[in-house]
Length: 325
Image (cartoon, rainbow, N blue to C red):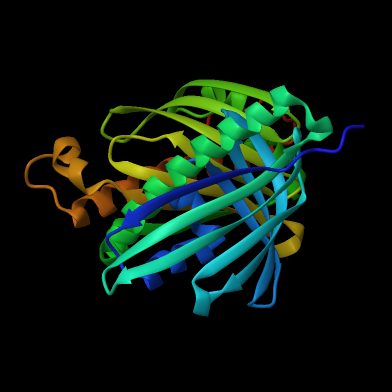
């Protein structure tokens, strides 16, 4: 086995926002799926405030990878250092740092540093990692700049909500319905097309056409991370025009009398410059928030009701398929 040689990369961008606002986004990794295009989902494994361990699912050269990192926060120095504890092939090791340097009270410079090595020091793998680091860093810095510069509007543009359905059955059959999304076009009325692939166990890519209550059809492309027995998380990599980002999850928890509470959660970042194009010349951000809440909440509630019918059916695959009384 050949010892991997360290390779380094540096990327930077100037942001028209105070350093504190930029640092806050960098430090809050669980929110990265909303802000950073490559990041699908982040689980916070443990934290003592100064250090944390996170598990990340993200795209790299259009492949979905998962790794675990330890991060050290230094808010006084406006720095977050990271080191991958569990890597994803072909990465042998990866470490780096986010540095935020105040330029003045309203501007800052962000520098993102990486040092990495490839398994067996394979040159093709090293080139692959370098392309992934360059591509992801460029996207992340551009979106970090956008998020920090619009931080004053996040309160009106960002919305999170959830809907729940109680199921008189155990979680395994509800999870099975949600996991087998390839069958949704014949099971759920608002899903007209769905293509699903699962090249890695538990990681699904999904392209779907859905109809909203007004009859319009929206095409989305998502990455789903399936975490049995009680959770599926996802991010839409291609969103409807009204949204800049959309992440969501299906959660199953214990319900009354041995049943299950199935919950659909959504977090959406609106695209303010597209509101009137999509909803009409008189539409406002408030109009868009109401529209998204109704459309997404309505569709996911219908999905949960079909999951309930499927799980509660005495003979699955017959009475519950494709209909709701």
